[in-house]
Length: 223
Length: 223
DNA sequence: GCAAAAGTGTTTCCCCTACACCCATGG
DNA sequence: CCATGGGTGTAGGGGAAACACTTTTGC
Image (cartoon, rainbow over all chains, first blue to last red):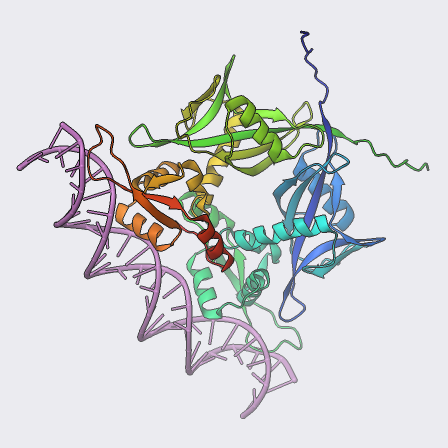
């Protein structure tokens, strides 16, 4: 029987690839809908993905591909699931991201598509899981605000939840719940442009300081 | 500018290691408590872990280490989180597992310890995450039954939830909720051994067929 | 008959739901 | 003044939480 020498080099090498499902709300259409960011390739669309560099942090790799390929920064980014190695020994670590589409136009080669868009089987599997997580998590963590501009109106917030959850919500009860949680700061009224009809909406900001304080006391967000 | 040739070999190789937090309830003590399975090593305790073989499925690797090192089979096993590569390029994929301690004695070199036991920093981080997930998930999925023998009593089930959630639960309301969900089958009464005091408890089984049927209708478990 | 453990029912209260009207602005 | 969109209050019902006594067994 021989002793196996200790080695500092890698054993059983795998390639690790991070893959991202980026969600954003399309407020232009009515009703607003949930879109996912895809890259146009020769044979259709793919979700953004990239090989993780040696020693690179996973979330950094995800942020890197979204910055380089889609010009996106400062998004909510959360790890989702790690998939088994495929035939080439590639392990995919899936992330999902939330972003406000704001003013930004999508970078060249990227497009926003209403979910579900046409994708390959693996991308679909991952997107399904991301949607499931998003629909569940958006109800007990205030992550939805990442998909809005810093300042937003109550109807926008409600439209966001309706788009994600795929159901319509009672406007009175929705506003009541949101305001009663005490995590929104009223910061003025919406300015009207030409063509804007109706009463100006109140503008709110998400009060993160307040939210963290409440969370520390055991309170939890809930829609 | 030169073309990079396509390669089928791995790029940016990493070693992947799965790591497991196995939870079980200690019904011997009163009140019963939540234990985690640890391996005794030279310098203390560690969570079970193993390098994932080339082409091996992640969950298979987790099941493999728990079978080989701890003699455990047929446990509830769920992926938890994937950690960034460390200095040696090792990426850890964390799983947590639930098992009924039943009759089984722990295999040699393994011990059950009340959480939290003394562990290294990485193991502690992972265990914290596993506990958080367990405490949350046990409330909306019927995974707790994996920590009981097939046949169990209502007080056992309640003790399990009390041990995991770290709070005491009203016995009447608890039984009411559990029975009203219609996922428990009454299968008899507990046999008393010498030394057993008090009224015999009703024995139940988890009715998985019924649970799946309800879930398909959009119903969801909730404690 | 006493101690130990298990089983069961009722009331209260709060929160979620359902629901309709008035207000502010642009044209 | 009319159309458009935004804001607000109330009443009722259902489910969760609080709460105490009876039953069965071993000793």
